[in-house]
Length: 406
Image 1 (cartoon, rainbow, N blue to C red):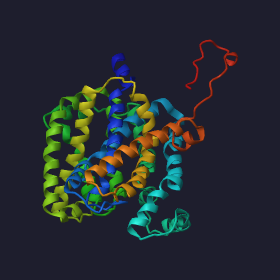
Image 2: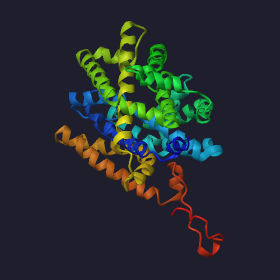
Image 3: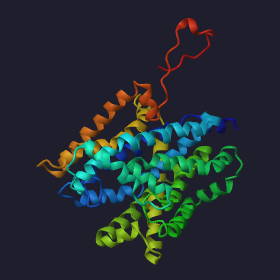
Image 4: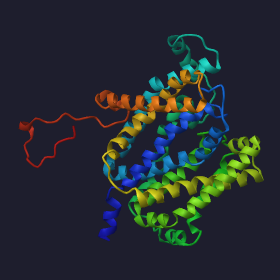
């Protein structure tokens, strides 16, 4: 019993590595978006089929992986923050989102207007029009769609906050061991019982996606809710991770087969991609929902099992990399769009353009993060902990008091 408690409480370094992978991939994903054939904020004059395949492949599981590690992170945050948990989530998620939509997102829209709306005014001219244009949009009654409309890529922050608050009663019961998951674990240990957890994902997508087809609407909320819950659940009992590690190559095979099928059908008929994105109730919708949820579920659990097996170790870069993730995530797409707007106009190979965007935007984001971490106002706005001043020696009364981090 004590061994199990220790296992649950100890730091899971593989989750930290997995978080770095998930958000690092997001940086690359947005760096190649100007070069695929799908709509985005800026586009290169020439697009390439290879980038289409990369987008279609990674889009099937990238955000599912982020919500999985977010659920795992929530397990540890609830244990360490306790009564201050919700207040901490507001600081970490809502404050950066509000700051982002005011100052980080407008440059993205400015260059989008220049490229697709033939806007010729200055940035100041743009700022006089932009707020009214944003607020005049018709998002219906869906709060979630407003997150995406106002926040572009940082929709994830309020999405995660709403998801956390929505699921909080259930999360507390899982944390307090109010449920017995022994039956679920026994099913998951069987040959293909490990896929039992994909069934609710399939069901929810089949029912909700034709009703709420827009990206980041309620259908996506409830589909993303499951990997979030699974990430939390798996951290509550190390036996889940043991099971997943034993099945990780099965996940790899299913992920490869289902992704190959999805890419083949999408490349053969572009209408299939549109039906996937904006489906109607049909047999094809059921079929592609099964395939797409198998893609998401198989890849994220393969990565979870693989990293749990191979990457559960400390490294000097791991802590600073994890601390920097939130500010770099908030900044990265704006930097990609600002730099990319000028780079796509260069008379060079599109692969070289992709490389230039990547090697300029990433260092710029890291440099800005270095500036952010030195200032408490910026730290607060970007969701980082406030840096406490080190107490003078004479102010420390108890020799056992642990000094605050610099």
